[in-house]
Amino acid sequence: MDSTRFLVFGALSSIIVITFGVVGYMVVEGWPLLDSLYMTIITLTTVGYEEVHQLSPSGRTFTIFLIITGVSFFLYMASAMV
Image 1 (cartoon, rainbow, N blue to C red):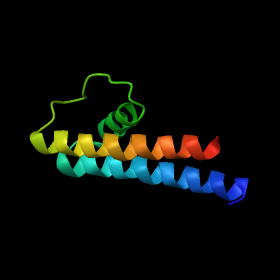
Image 2 (image 1 turned 90 degrees about the vertical axis):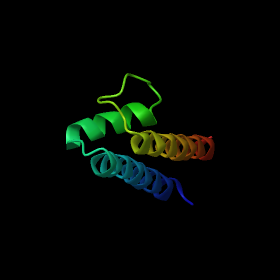
Image 3 (image 1 turned 180 degrees about the vertical axis):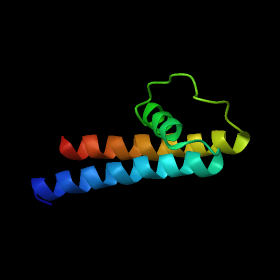
Image 4 (image 1 turned 30 degrees about the vertical axis):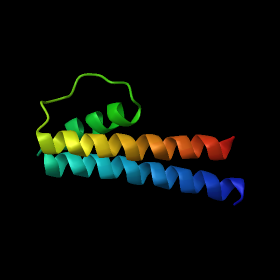
């Protein structure tokens, strides 16, 4: 895959993962868009700030899945770039 295609694939995939996280928090927890986006970003970047709101058991399960998916994706992208 040439470098331009790889960059486009990486950018689109990042947007998909972030959108999945935002929509997931909106559906599972019923949070507004900005809270969902903020929680998704701090989760995917593994910053580890405190949760925006308390998570339900379903929200915790979703967060675990989002961490595994997001970190795996970003590690794949980093290894592919190297």
